[in-house]
Structure formats: structure tokens, C-alpha cells
Image (cartoon, rainbow, N blue to C red; front, side, top):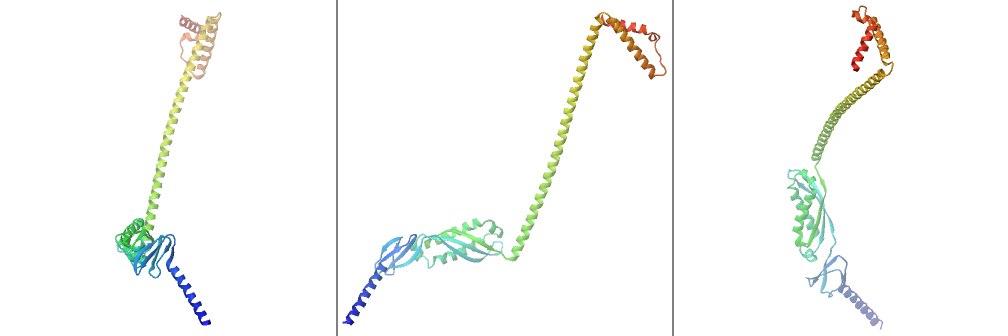
Length: 310
């Protein structure tokens, strides 16, 4: 009785285990951004997208699983010879994505390793057509050429090469020293050019300043002369106006009663004063005889004024 009871328990356990295995083999849940490749009796059957799927137990089998996310692959350093025969070591980073799970499963044994090897050989080919100086200046162009060549070659593998970036370029020590000397000479040349340009600009600025100074001085002298001329003209005009006004007042004064006598007296005073000054400045004088007679002289001047009025 115990023997039959133990056998029944083992049988029930085996049935339960078989059911669990069947369920595990039958039901499959594919994660988001993933593809499962199913083979039926060893032959490709279908590709499962994300979601819940049922398989035929012991007949269908998930042979390959692929992620559809973008993958980053480090490309190992490789020795490349440039166009000018310089050996450099180049490291790179490649970004790929599976776009066809069927081709990625059956088109190549290991698409990651195949893409990495292809990237190395393509990089050697591209660097072999480029001079050393341009490998630093044209990294973007080199990356584009590598991506184009990889994408064309990897199309049968069901993958797409999105980007390729040169992460590092290692140079021999002798080349590094030569480049440093070249860069030092270039910096010194630029410094000399900058210094000469500065000196030239300084000389130009000084000459422009001197030119402007001369112009300003000449403009100032011109304005000074104009102002002086205007001042002299205005002075002459004012003197002429004052003289005319004085003469007019003298003429009016002469017409008043006793004016002629006052004028005669004034003339006599001025005559005597000037005659006295003349005697002080000279030791010897030669004068007309009539000038010694003050009264006659005054009378003569008065007669001149009379004729001038008429």
C-alpha cells in the first residue's frame, strides 16, 4: 500500500514538472525593443516582436535573442600607416543597431565582432589615403567615410552603423617632438606677426595724431587771424565813427557864439605845446620866419578852418 502511494506521489510530481516545462516552452514574453528568432525543428520559423507569444513545445525553439537598442562597441587600437608613411595608433568607438533580427542571426556568426574587425580594416584604408596633418584636422570627414563604408558592408548582416568616432590618435615620440617644434615655431611666427602688426598700427596712430595736431593748429591759427582781422576792422570802424562824431561836434561847436574864438585859442595852445616839444628834441631848428609869430600862425590856421567850412 505504501509502495503504491509513493509511486502515485512521484507520478503526480512528474506530471506537474512536465506541465511546468511545457508551459515554459510554450509561453514566451518578449521585452520591449527586443526580437526573438524562433526555429522549428532546426529551421527558421519566425521572428517574435515584443509581447506575449505561444510556441509549440519541443518543436519550436528560441534560437537567438537580439536587442534593437543602439549598441556601443569599443574598437581596439590598431596600427595605421598614413599617406606620408607615419605609423599611428588609432582607437575608435562604433555605434550600431540591429534592424533585421533574421539577418543578424544567419547573415554572420557574430555581428559585433564582425563590425569591429571591419571598422579596423576600413580605418586602416582611410588613414592610408590621408596625410598625418589632416588626420587631426579632418576627423569628422574620416568618421563619415568610415561610417559610409561600414554601413554598406554591414547591410547584409541586418545591422546599421550609426556613428563612428575616433577617440584617440597615438603618435610615435619622434613625431610628437617634431610636431611640438613645428607648433612652437608657428606660435613664434604668429607672435612676431602680431608684434609687427601692433608696431605698424602704433606708428599709424602716431602719424594720424600728428596729422590731426597740425590740422588743428592750422585751423586754430586761421581762426586767430580771422578774429584779429575782424577785431582790427571793427577797431578801425569804431575809430572812424568816433572821429566823424568828434569832427561833427567840433563843427557844431564852431557855429555856436564864441566858438571861433575858442577854436583859435585851442589852436594857439596846441601850436605852442608842439613847438615847445620840437625845441626839446632838437638842438638846431630851421623854421620859416612866419612861424615865429604865434598870432599870425593862429590866424592862418583859423583862416584854413574858415575855408574848409566854406
